[in-house]
Length: 191
Image 1 (cartoon, helix red, strand yellow):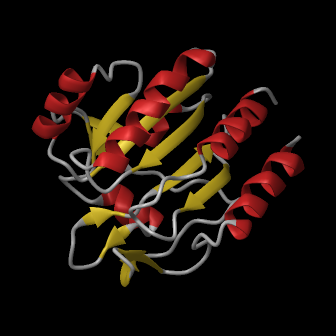
Image 2 (cartoon, one colour):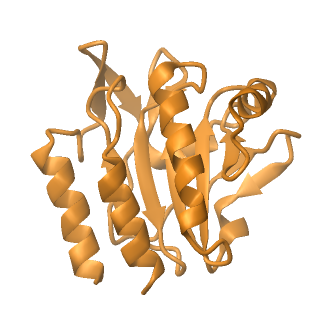
Image 3 (tube, one colour):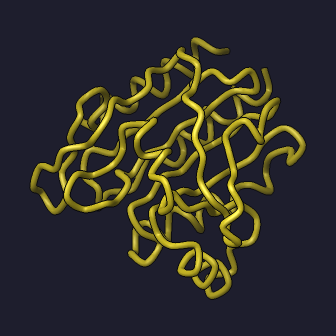
């Protein structure tokens, strides 16, 4: 099953022309550079520290023993980011809440995230901010230089803390492959 999920994730990323192991993506068709290095599938997922709506620190280690889907978006106040967040919010109920958690991370301030969640009815996933320390952006190599935004991406960390799936979307304005990520999440969480 692990090999199947890994192959599905990597094949879909490669087939769709998405930036897999490069340090840049495009934004509006223009290349932008990313700071840091993307973690590799099969490695221990880098830890990170972000904040919730109350500025309370939240770490990846807080979800130890659970399969974690991390949906990184540039800003919740844009169309694709809003749709991505709402899609995963709608999907989370299809998974066992005791063993699976879904997170949306952006560099939006917690106040803006809280407003977005209230306005859009996002209440099933955890929306977290990397605005304070930019620690997630740094650890996952996702900070778009000169913009202060996260590159659009999906990561899945298994219950043992291993990064099992990643998708770095090559053009920031494009959607990730929701179906591939959700299929991988289902497969990984059932192992």
